Image (cartoon, rainbow, N blue to C red):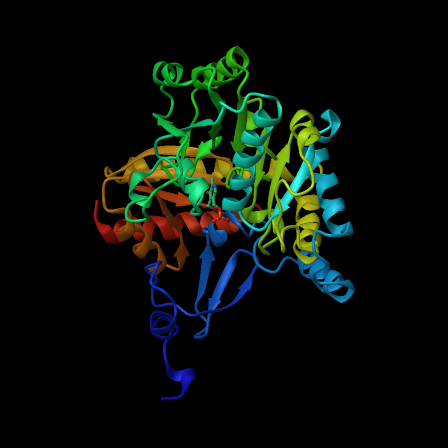
Length: 404
Ligand SMILES: Cc1ncc(COP(=O)(O)O)c(C=O)c1O
């Protein structure tokens, strides 16, 4: 058989390790909010590469930045200063306000690596401060911080850890939004409290105001650090540059990835001045981290999302989606609570979420799932009013196909 007549999904399953259950679909091109198959079928992409393609597919500013940087140098290594890295660091320190307080950036390649860096920096900080007993990282049940061992240990979903042998020690998981339970586990041995400003994979769960207050108060009382995982929430996804700032968390370290590289793998840990000051050459490192092409693409993206008016537009579109989702949950009794913020939205479903995701795909709408039987919508931040209206009509048709 000619390779061209073989389905992508069959080629995929014969050659790619089966760690994802993939549908029979063969995308060959992306255009803004759309993905297009080899047969010319168009799908409205409300997954955005799981919150990566913030500006949709192939945004001209990102394409241009990649083309230009790849003609200068594609890789340099962290043995030498690298200008695209410096420019993106400076922009990120500026838009987060970390720069004004003397904070610094450490680049890597992915979200899980950004969290590995955050955990290592937090523990090393206390070690250098003569408090090497402070190693415990308090994280949350249902949290998701990545798949490598340290980030996996931080992750509060036991099912993801089973069968992988010994998991690194020094992590305590406590229930989300449970102030009393949190107070019981934070103490003078706590190195850091680590959390997502919205627990995205775990079910698009927001923080209560009391919980934010308790986290900040415990941090102050015991002098531990606060690590905010902005990998999914950050860079406009929750309607602000930083979820932590929007919801009132006082982060010492924030971690970034997903859309940071404009679609090219890139991760980042931003650390406060006191932590940056005690790090020395050799403490941490990476061959590829902060790749110049990824940083150039990322800078083009961050310049756009931080321009005046951009995030206001995201909130307007978010309100449009939320109003549509509320109307649908009135119409379909099995649709429940609306969750999330900005372009990180979820709706609880009593029907199996995988059926709803498949029904959406049938209608030409790509949507994703989250824990707790939640349908997760992650549209591009640039989605238009017309595209939102079309997506809501497709979701309505998908729901109707599953019955009232
Ligand atoms: C909040 C959060 N942290 C960390 C990660 C891990 O990122 P990566 O897949 O780039 O390693 C993810 C990925 O979904 C995430 O959503």
